[in-house]
Every structure is written in structure tokens, then in C-alpha cells.
Image (tube, rainbow, N blue to C red):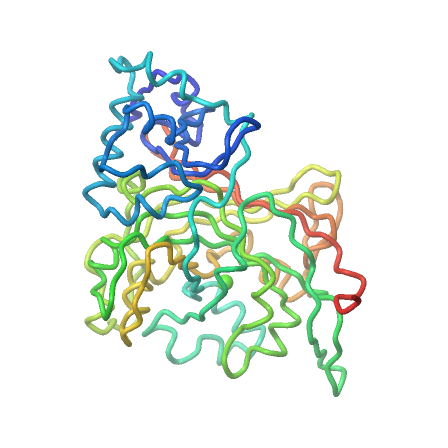
Length: 418
Ligand code: CA
């Protein structure tokens, strides 16, 4: 499918993240307006609350877009999602009859502040990248026990905290926690020394379910995707993770990109999961291409310095699709809600430069990486700005996600000082 040209000229550049084919959904405010729904088109944002108020967009009787979240639209279901996309495409396409009415409702992105695009109901994070799981397992347990015996049969996950999810640009303070190094008999309470990123995609549940659902139903229920960084305290993790999995190591923050890229926009980029070593049980079997070909990058910029690209990989490296993860999530009966966020798990490829965490890039700190600025990193230092980027490459256009970044702030001097 080629570029669909828009009368918003900036949207037609072949490397622009937000062409008419994309139409990602965000929440923005300006000096004149409270946070509200907006749609990115080129360098502009279409003010959806204003478009609804003027009657240009009218999907149901009640207003959907004068609120700082897209959950209300999600609640309306796939037919309304499709109707909105069709209407937006008609309003913004080259030669649109209503251009004169739409043009005054565009806000320059440069004048807008972006916020979390939806209310995160609950947050679950998975561990579904085979190269990542093999690398981390090798470091934590040795190569012969790298992949847990269940790993090739179920998508492993844990329940995270929705309250920890923040939008791109939010500074991240280095956590304190209980750490224990192999050289010491007893743990100590200290600022994290091995603070790390995890390059992930987040899938957003757009349709609620109650009870087990199939992989196809799960795919139907997903509304869209964001970039996701699961900030991780490796030293806290190494001490706490057995037997119930990560807890405080993952509780500091989870950053997401500010634009929800819809499943509809990503449809041309669907691809299959990798070959299976074991056949999956029926309720998890693939039933169509449900991964996506999305190029992903990680950059690290020391304070006041230029960024270095430290990793490049692709979402198609995952062993399980978000649909399989969502289906698995419901098998024991757990209801899923509109606005639930599912982290894919760290996305790493086979090659060293394709590793989606510093833990893997520096091999647990044994092989520090050198940045273009000459600095050396095993883990994140205070002042570092870490940014994820991603796009699907179409024929003369891109489906971009915007960025997902944050600067690491120094740990508090004493978290218990009152
Ligand atoms: Ca993770």
C-alpha cells in the first residue's frame, strides 16, 4: 500500500512518522487548552474536541474527545474505531472538500505538550523475546539452564503496576532498594547501581473480556501499540526475583510513547512468529500473522552530549505475539479491561548490537560499551537520557511511534528523611 497523500504537506515526506496512513491518537494541551484528544498528522495535531464540537466528527450521540484519554473511544468497539479512521482519512486527504473547516482546528505539534494517551487500567509485562530470555538466563543461571522449561510453551509474565506508567519525557529517578552482591553475606539498602532499560512494545486492550478468549479474539480486542521502556534495577532484581519474579526492580517507572498507533495503521506490516521448537497447545496456536515488522532503536545521550545509537532490532524477533500473550492472560478466567497495557518483554535480536537492554549489551557489566562521545557504559549513569524510537517502513512512507525517552535523575539522598 503506497502513501495516502494529505493536504497537510509535512505529512507527505517519506520519512515523516505521521503520514495520513498512520493517524495515531494522543492527548495534548497548549497554553490555551486543557488536555484533550488529538490526532497527529505531519507536524500538526488535529484538535478532536474542537472537531467534535463543530460537528465535523460525530460518531455517537455523546462527546468522546473532550477528555484527556482515548478510553471512551475504545469502549465503543471496532465498528466505531473503523468509522473514525475512515472519517479522519476523508477529512485530511488531498483534495478533501472540508479542508477549510478542518484547517483552523490544527495545532502545531511544536506548541503542544503531550500527555499519557489513555488511562492505564492495569499493566502486565511479559518475557517473550527468546534472545533476551536466553541472554539473561545465561547470566543469571548459566547456559544450561538459560531458558526455563516452561518458556517455549507459555508466555511468561508478571503483574506490574499501572501507577508506574509515565509518558515520554518524564524524568526517572534512580531507585533505592535492597541489594546483595555475591561477595557479601547480607544485603544492604542502597541506591541502585545497575539501572537499566528494557526495549519493548506495549499492546493496549481496547475491548474488555470476561473469561478465556482465543488468540483470534485477543487480536480483535487489541486497539493499538506504543513503544515501552521497562526501567529495570538489575541489582534489586537479582536478589529478589526468586521465587515469584520481579517486584521492586520493575516498580520505579515504565515509560511509553505518547501516540497510540492503531492496529489498523499497522495492518500492512503483519508478520509471523518464528518457527516453533515445540508445537504450542491449541489455545495458544498461531492463527495468522500477529507480529509486526517494526524497526526499533535505542539511543543513549550522556548529559549535555549527543546521543549514540546503542541498539537496533525489530519487533518481529518476539517468540509470542501480543495476541498470544493476551489470550494466555485470560486462560484462568481473569477479566481484561479497556485500557489494560501489556508489555511485550525485552526485544533483542541474535546479534550483539540488537540487544534491547544494557544488561545484555554490556554482558552484565563485563563488556562495557563505548559511546560515540568516548564515554563508557555498563549501566545507566545519572544524567543519561535514554530514548526508544520505532517505525514500520512502508512503500514511500513510515508508520512512526514518536519517541519514548526519559532522563535518569540521581537517587534521593535519603528516601526516608521526613
Ligand atoms: Ca520487561
